[in-house]
Length: 109
Length: 115
Image 1 (cartoon, rainbow over the protein chains, first blue to last red):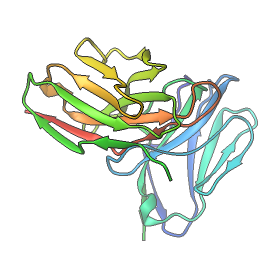
Image 2 (image 1 turned 30 degrees about the vertical axis):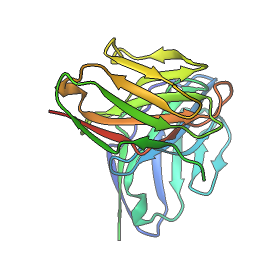
Image 3 (image 1 turned 90 degrees about the vertical axis):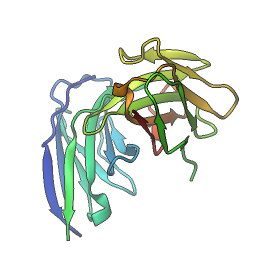
């Protein structure tokens, strides 16, 4: 699986969009970008994944650069319940998940 | 919405005792996992299980660990002789199938405390 690099932490204001960056410069053509989050010792929660195209679901949007070397997870209207550690994982389909340190996001009122 | 469940939520055991952690994956899922997270550390992969056999395991998953799907619904992790360093949150996950690109769904975890 390709190595990913994320900021250690970031704050965002409640009601504003939260943009979480991730670098994966060594990603290979068959590796997807997955995002999970973990709210205070709960089980990791799947958010979204993509290969090349931008993706959107009810939780978030995923923007992947054309060269696929980086991506951004967008939480459109952050709430206090979005405070969590967010993990960006680049892996081929079928592989296990390898979690890094993630980005600790604190949503402030 | 279907979800992965785990029991117990918290297990306290003495060093050297055997523990069994139980998971009920989502009913139509075919691929199962165990992960663990020591307090303050990363989530670590332990083992994956498909078609009644282990498909991959990490270095952590030594002879003290075993997994089983005893019936059509449960998926268990057994630690034969617990050590202090086995204290962690243990998460079960499941996925609908192995081929293709599908996400894993995690349970709420079992907190194992070894004293």
